[in-house]
Image (cartoon, rainbow, N blue to C red; front, side, top):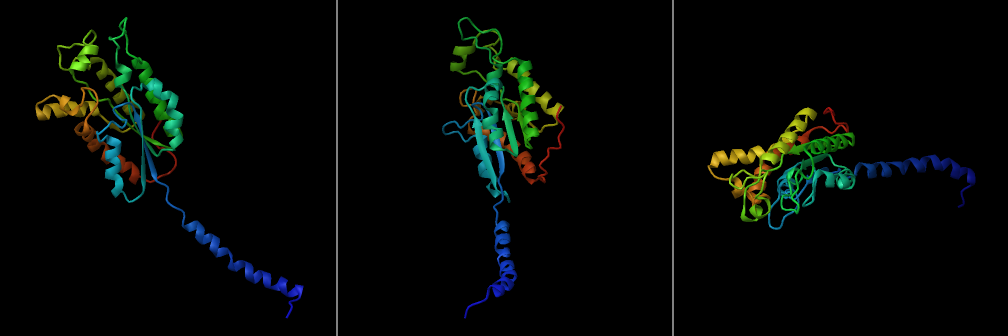
Length: 261
């Protein structure tokens, strides 16, 4: 039996509503976007051979998080904050991070006395270092992310480091003779964190406290007098983890409430 065209028109309103719930159901099955964490730093952050760096340790510990978490290690050996500025948009903002962990300072502060003629000043001035950190924090917040700042770890003499740096302004006769300039850069991080209301993991102080508690040099935490070994990295991870978990658990509003100065 053939249907008249007028009958087809009368059936159309009945057929079309039956199709619409299929598309609505598809929308409900969208996956939850992961909470993205970028670690942004130099060789103390970057993957380093057999060392279990803090980013990898956090990744393992956060597997128990009720929501998905994605960690991206953007540490680059030898980087100063000036060098990092050139890759900041791609390596950090390009990942659309919810949280960025920032740790620079050792390379910025170093005076290359091994050069001929010897350098007379740090690779990046203290003023420029401070300015760069403030820029990173401000831009991350403008893009909806949050920040944790970390001070650099202290340094301890080894035969290799003596071969390069056993000249003024460094003092090879003092166990902490590599640190007087670096300590000023650590203090700059503390000042930026306080001024901008940024959570701080004071790695420099953690190592100092470890020495006082254990009665021995923190060189035990440093594979080569400069880069933390797995034990040193774990000290950092232990301090980072509760702050990171609190950031993951916080309601996501899309707007950072922390003030930018």
